[in-house]
Amino acid sequence: MANNQKKRATAWEIYQNGYQSNFWGGSRSDSKRFFIEFRNAVIYEIRTTGHCKLLDRILEKGTGTLDVVVCAALVDINNGFENNTLTDVEKDPRYKNFIPHVCNNMGREIQWSDCELNRDFMHIEELYEIIHNTREILRMYYAHTSEVENDAVTSTEKKEKKKNGDVVEHANEQAEKIISKAKAEAERITNDANAEASRIIEEAKARAKEIDDSVTKQVSETARNQAKKLVSRYLTEEQKSYKSELNDEMRKFTDAYIENSNRAMTVHTEMCDVTNAVQARWIQALDDTISKMNDVKSDFYSHLHDWQISLFPKEIKPLSERFLELYRIINVDKLLREEILFKPLSVEMSDDLTDKKVDENGDSEIRIAGLQKLNKTLTTFLRRFELSLNGLDLYVFYPNPGDEFDETWHIPDDEDEEYGGKLIKECVVPGIAKKASDDLGDDVLIPAVVKVEMES
Image (cartoon, rainbow, N blue to C red; front, side, top):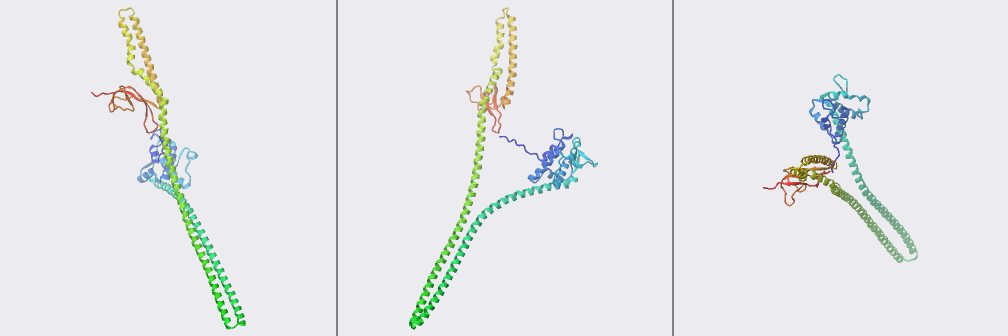
């Protein structure tokens, strides 16, 4: 498909083309429109690319003269960025007739019409600093715009990293909460166990003291010793029992702490894997979608071209055939025309001795004149017919003698022979082709009938 998008003119191209004046001619835009287009082109180039070919050449040269309208546009760009506004030469009544910012050698303002009648110039040395400042201001704007765009991309990446970091931070917070609760529970169990052990020990001591006092009063020294042994054994067994329970509680706490830590690490790893998998699937799906869209676009263009090729012959081939039939009647069937034209002559020769000689001669001239008039009328109609075909993007092509025979564009008048690679001797009947709207070449509807040179 043809690309109809118009390319934007650069400041250098606008400067080279100029404006309407006695010097440049009258086929260009006026000086005020030239001022606006040139100013906008300079701003657009440096804002989008960071440089302007015309300004670079002017500053590189450093000497010479510039057209006064070009100078006014450059000064307006410089002042416009300092004052944050550009001069509106179309709406501002002050500049309806006069060029802004510049004056002639007498210090008077210059009218737009003066530039179109006779060009004025200014020295580059007088405006060198302003032109240099104009380029630097626009370059700073371009650098700032690029920096803002880079900051936007960086901000997006930071947000993505922050999102992933939030997931990890949440997992770490959950793990810390589990560990903190486990530590608090272990500390509570330890404190309860110590308190219970102290209580049991105090109870045992009190009980032992009571037993000791009772035994002391009621039994002999042997009985007292036996009682002490019993108390000692009782205390030892109780201590072992509570120590074993405490060890079991500590082991359970340690196992729970290790299990919770492993679970937190597993959750963190799984979340990272899921995040990476989702991102990879999204990227793959996007690539697949883009590829499928490109395939659909290619298929659509191919089917559209095939549809056009199949549609054209069906609609307009009958018109082409009628044109060629008329062409044959007028230009090809010469024997028939000669037979009609010369028949009266033969009749005249056979009736030479009759009295009707004069009448037959007059009738022959009338018939010849009528046929010539008919031939002229049909030839005129044939030319108009051809112009009508041109309106349908069709054209009649006549192969030239000496052209190489092409099976796509030509067919021989004698189809029994092979003519590949030979040269055309004469065009018998022209062909008709359809102008293509793309780069695939014109479509031949009816090939031309030609005579081919035969090798001697």
